[in-house]
Each structure stands twice: as C-alpha cells, then as structure tokens.
Image (cartoon, rainbow, N blue to C red; front, top):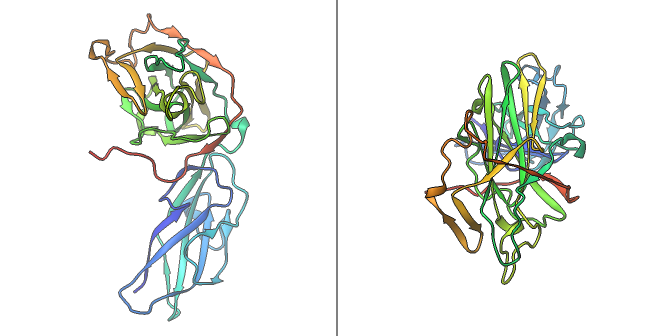
Length: 316
C-alpha cells in the first residue's frame, strides 16, 4: 500500500505567515513495494476542511494531473489574500492505478500589503554611538480584550533582535530573529499564533530588542551599520468570538525601560546585571510608573517580507 506523508508548503509543515503568492507544495510517497512510483496527482484547496471535495473546493481544484512531480508543485488557484488560511490535500495514483489520499495540511498567509500594517516603529530615547553601546530596551503595553477570544496572531519584527512575551509567557521558540538582511532594503517579520497566550480581560505584551546585526558590530570597527538604536514593530491582531477584530499596535502609548541586559552584541556578547532585574515586567499589574514614553521612529522604507525557512533555536 502507498501512503502520502510529509506534506509541505514552501518547504515547511503547515507554515504560518507566508507571503509567496504562488506557494509551492510538496509531498512524499511511503511504500514498502519496490518500483513504486507516482503517475498522477490531484490537489484540492479550500477555505475550510469540510470543503475539500471536488465539488466544493473553493480555492483550487487542480483536477487529475498526469505527472510524477511531487516536489515544488506551484499553486495555481484563486488569488490569495492577507491572513488567509488555506487547507489542502492531495490524492496520488501509483503505477498500478491505485489511488491514495493524504491527510489534511494548511498554510496561512502573512501581511501582504503595506497598508495591512497599522503599527509604528518605536524605540527608546537613549542613543549609543559607533563605539559605545546602550542597555537593551524593554517595551511593554497593557490592554484589555473586548470579548471572548477566537484566535490571535502577533506580527513582529525589529531593527535589532527581538524576544516577545505575553502575560509572562515567551512567544515562539526561535532566537536572534529577524536575522540579518540589508535592513535598509528588506526586513523580515515573524508571525506567531498567540491565541493561548491571551486571557479574558487584562493582558500585557512585552518585548526586548537587542542590538543584533542592525545596531551592533557586524565587522571590524564601528557599530550602527543600519540603525542608530534598536527599534520594534509589533502588531497583535485578535479575532473575537463574534467575528470582530481588536488590534494592538506599537505606537506612542507604549512605555520602555532599561533592565538587567546592559550590553548585547552579536560579536561582543552580553553583559547581565542581575541587580537590575524587573520581576513581572511583562505581566499585568506591574508598576511601570517609573517607565518612560517611547519614541516613535519614521519608517525607513525597507520592504517587509515574511520570514522563510527554519529559524535559529536553542538546542541545549
């Protein structure tokens, strides 16, 4: 018997927040029969799992395609839109004429248009120099949800490297995001499913932004190759049970302060002063009366693109 496994979209399993308008789909055949091969495939894509039938697929119905291709099959369905989740599956025929159907897979689009972003770049007011660093800024924002929560997505990037948390719970398991690009031309953003991070009523969103490649050393000599100081761009989109949306964005209403990470540099490492720890800084009810207003920064004109491929993660 032939089974279909390892369904991938843009090389990833169920990717969240892609911006490829014609994503490439792949799968593998698993069988213990020698000489087994694919002779045809049929892809169905829909806006919900219950529409994944030949008569109801409302995003793409490839029809039966006589082909042995199972890697990088280009999506050719309806135009995709920001935030859209697409469910898909594939049926494969082997050389004996027998067919096998895959399990369900999905992919979700990111923010495809500049107008989708309502967030503003924010930073601390303290600026370092080409030869002197400043402590890592901590940013926070408290807010109240306006109803029962159905789902939530955090779209975030930075000039520097970021780490976000909601109600004291770390968001994601990647580190050193958004990585290194030419930040004057292209900046990667990440998308996280934070539905389970939120609670009814009061919530707190926090972020730290280290110097990274944008502000820190990227070679011999000076710092600040791309930006004078670390900046954050964050947009939390909450879909409520009644279908309405609540959007929390980085703007002038946020606050910042400096904490125990007094230096953070890709090449020079990190200096940590535990005396400056701020327990609960990313939770509700924290006393931020001594925290400072953020500075809103102009957009640098760089294109925002969704992160692609595997991210850097802690392994021990």
